[in-house]
Amino acid sequence: MTLALLGGRPVRGSPLRSAGSIGPEEIRAAMRVLESGVLSQFLGEASSDFYGGPEVRGLERDAASMFGVGNAVTTNSGTTALQTALAACGVGPGDEVIVSPFTMSASAATIVLQHAVPVFADIDPRTYCLDPERVAELVTERTRAIVAVDLFGQPAHWDALRRIAAAHRLLIVEDAAQAAYATYRGQWAGTLGDIGMLSLNYHKIIHSGEGGILLMRDARLVERAQLIRNHGEVVVEAFGVSDIRDLVGSNLRLTEIQAAIARVQLRRLPALFDRRRTLAERLTNRLAALPHFWPPEIEVQATSTYYGYPIRLDVDALGVSRATIVAALAAEGLDVNEGYVRPIYLQPMYQRRIAMGRRGCPWDCGHYDGTVNYEPGICPVAERMHERELIVGDFGGPGHAETDIDDVALIFEKVSDALPQLRDWEARER
Ligand SMILES: *Cc1c(COP(=O)(O)O)cnc(C)c1O
Image (cartoon, rainbow, N blue to C red; front, side):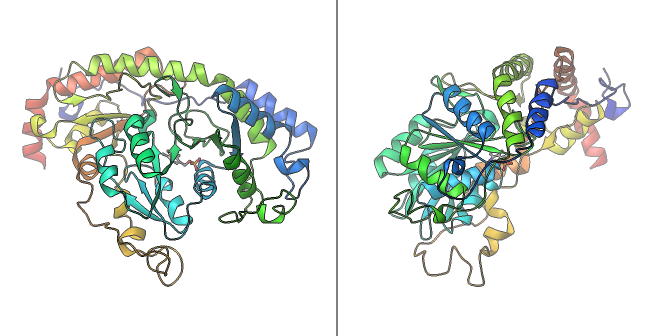
């Protein structure tokens, strides 16, 4: 078959589109709240409304019971959930927090928002999650916590990360924004660290437009998270809270409509997860037969949501660049992302060390007495994935059918079969 890039017929005439997961049940739930007239019941005072209205509290009960932890605290985004988690753990000025550079920017920016210093550890090239050996090398006496991201929906290397955290008395904040309903040794993503977070953003596995859910066992963390979410400084005396450090409150409250929608989505999560997994595994079975394309490897002790389906290219063996592969896929009717994100430390904020104020907080305003390196080259695996080797697709969302996935597999097989022609094309065109 001639590649569409070289004048042949494309496999697909229309792009793969996700239908989204909002349906009649979500609409009814939102209408019920609208008809009640109570769109948020939070009050920033020491009363029962400090904890929000019936839908918010119902969502927190549902999430805590579904994920088998004692407690859930909702927030108005995944990002504010992460920031709340860090603050609840007491991460503040002068502290270092170890995090992956290969993740959504908020995994690290929330550390900066706490006026603490992110320290970037490289990733494992098989799972794209933190490489525990690199994490261990970066622990100092200033390290307070690790933010472990379950990237592309696959839980991080939790056994090893927990050993490091225990040895150095560090807390682990789990960023499970992409991993709702994934598991590690039978435990749910979001419950694998000391405190974990799920995102309810529109682009995630389940959503209510925006929103976040914190999961935790420790009652003290629950109280701190509730205070940070809702103007805590006003009520600390009434609640008898004496350790008030890092407890400045904000308004990070979810609305009743969002909570009502999220409760429906949470009930549908197992089915949405199973469908994603079935379709992703169908694709993996086909791609595994291709010599130079590496589909995601899910470790035996884990399951994945396949939020973003990463495919690593053996670019040296392919003999063509990633850009040429992506162009060939696009011509066949398949859009994938070239790379995922630029390693976070290469963003201007880290390169110029300008975040808060004129003196360059958190790096240079008196609290921090360490040194941290953000030079290009510090995380070579993340840089290589970004620059050369990784492509990321979105396969398995609502509305994707088995036939769509078979098209995707066929497109990769077609491109793989035509590598010699593609090499000639690249030599001519580029
Ligand atoms: C989406 C995402 C977040 C932030 O969640 P929001 O709900 O969009 O604020 C944080 N970390 C990761 C890994 C994400 O994918």
